[in-house]
Amino acid sequence: MSILFTVSIEQTPDRTVLHARGEVDMGTVSTLTDALDTALTHDPAPPVVVVDFTEVTFLASAGLAALVSANQRARTTGSGLVVVTPKGSVTRRAITVSSLEHVLTLAEEHAAVDVERG
Image (cartoon, rainbow, N blue to C red; front, side):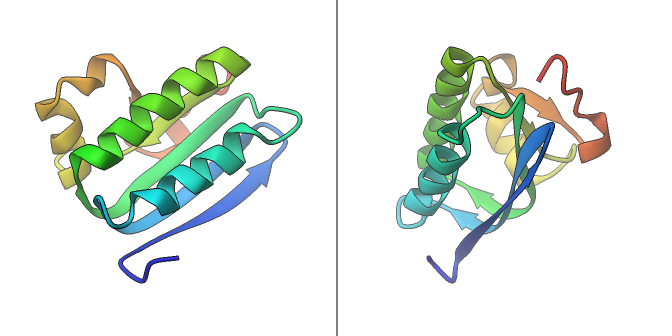
């Protein structure tokens, strides 16, 4: 695990939450993809995987690609994937500049995540 980027996983009956912290780039994206793989291959599949990026300070294209790939995988398993990223944050900006807000489901905080829609 990189000291520039860490992910912890919290599982509850209705969701799996990935708490991310630090910088997501080519050098650290494998930590993110490993955590996403762990969450998405859990048996049984969680209704929703929440990727908490509130403490992510940099999000490069490699991280965006990992989120899009995980979103596609979640849909094939019947799970939802929601990225928690506050308005005005660097992660929200990276997502919107890339026009991925139309591909990914975004929430400003955990309380806004609806398990039914994911």
